[in-house]
Image (cartoon, rainbow, N blue to C red; front, side, top):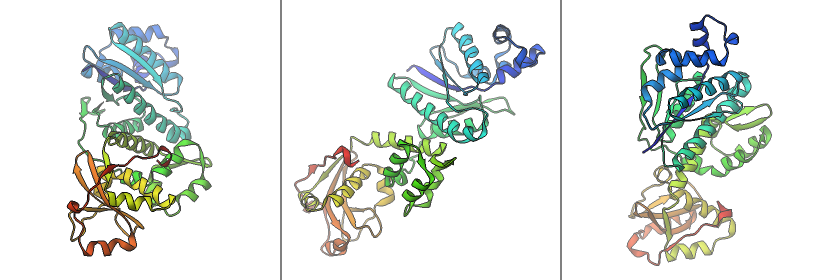
Length: 354
């Protein structure tokens, strides 16, 4: 399969060229730097050429992701020309707000880096290409968030260790991330992502929600937005939900009867639970095995509405009962067993209830 390498770009090309040519960076012209790139040892020319000299394969495509600065754009353009002359397909992309202004860099710039990486990953996947992240160049914080994106999206990440000058490639890690917190509060993340929200608005929305949500938020001026890590986790969560969209949830005739007798507010809540049920991570965190039953119950705790279900197969869930909390103990006195339920029909969600 064809491969694309996403490369974060720093400014080591300019500083290394200036040192080699005994000039100041501002005194260098593009022709001098291009000639330096052609003649210098790739392992010494820049952080990007050093890592690419060990990573590149003949059919690879390169995307240089550069900061929102003149220096970053210049380095990316010169690297693009250099590798195009070697026969590679190359593209550059500017990361908005990723610059040296501290306030914007900390929040908007790093969040923009995360969004750019994720959008580019999806674009390359849509074209049937494998993706590798080369996080050697750029700010040190860029490396950290590039690694986070790689972990969340199951991608290998490579970088050069600055002390040992040897490439380190972190392979995809087979970790099942727990997205249950995001699933339980998907409405909040959808809301905060759609527009700039004032601190007062966000604080009002956060009332009664877990304190852990604040770990995924950041304050900028009078607004609160998703932090760079929050953006990464939320986008990975949306991808995960898309992956489990094909899981079929069916309701027994008894569950359908209970559902139809509920008011609209209760039905909307059940709709959300049924959608979350598709997510294995949510089921693991929110289900319990009651006595006198071969089924599971979700969500845990003193929740007004409960689902009693079982996994028919890896891609099919059967909900046998939907009940209010006041009926929970009574129904299990006589036992709840899957072979007592029939008439299962697939559940369809109305888009506006998501």
